[in-house]
Image (cartoon, rainbow, N blue to C red):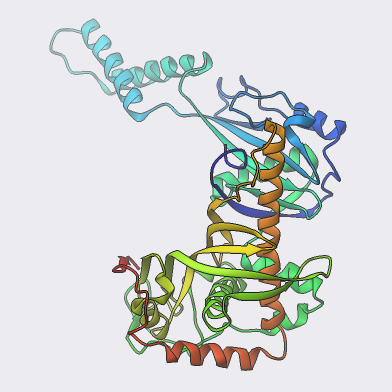
Length: 421
């Protein structure tokens, strides 16, 4: 499973209320065992059940320090079982029930409304009995890496259903309340730590170019005024989420105008440097929600003429592929700015093969947490600039950089893929 094998994709959840365990001790393991998935919990009128599994496979409930306890972190999975009788089976059972009733009736007489209702009830009873015997269930396992020291929960929980399940299991098991940690929420957390909460509340969405001049319409096709400031549809839930898109644009600017180097300060106050290379994937969308989106793919999509024209036309990056290097380590991933979700994360390979499965897991967990902390440090470095007094001049430099891009830049990517919207 991801975190244990292969590339990793995850969204970040944040512990908003309650206390995370300080470490994975015997009490923590006992909590996992007490809230493990009940294999018979789904069925007989119950359509949904969820709980913990140890994470080595779907049926693994052998919780232990070896499998789940790491330095400052817990690795496990949330399993969800749900009743999922295929629609084709429901229709087939009902058709068979109607056929049986037809045989019992007079030859050639059509079934009455009452007969059809009885056939429906017979079919439902049939598949409900099968559910009670373990058939027609859908199983899902979602790995979870809990950074206990930071109160951060990493896992594939970006979808509404997956988030709701994780929220419920964590609350029931450990008494903690989690929230999605999109760019806006992360900005609030970082601003509080930087003592710049008031500065965050006073900011507005950045416009690096003039608004598009094309006519805009609302969802019903009526004319809509285009304001001077961006109004992205994807930031409707939390306007601060748009900071994640400005963050990606800032990284893009740093990669071209500052040799891809960013000075960062970690949570312990130590300074360091992170190197960036942008590559493979670039998805841009109109910040004023009046033009469509484009996706570019290639070795250096940010250097393409299409990327330059998109920026000059009012589009901002929503997803960006990159390689991040720090202290001799490197990771490759795709980052979505407004949601701050990571996909296709390739963890670094150790120079020497691990001597045991446990050592291999320790290396992967430590690498994954180090990557997430590096993204945190990059975002914090951006927010220090965005919430500081020098932002006006920095924004002006970024605007000049966008305006100065030409259609003859080297390293053009492939033809853009037009996206709806």
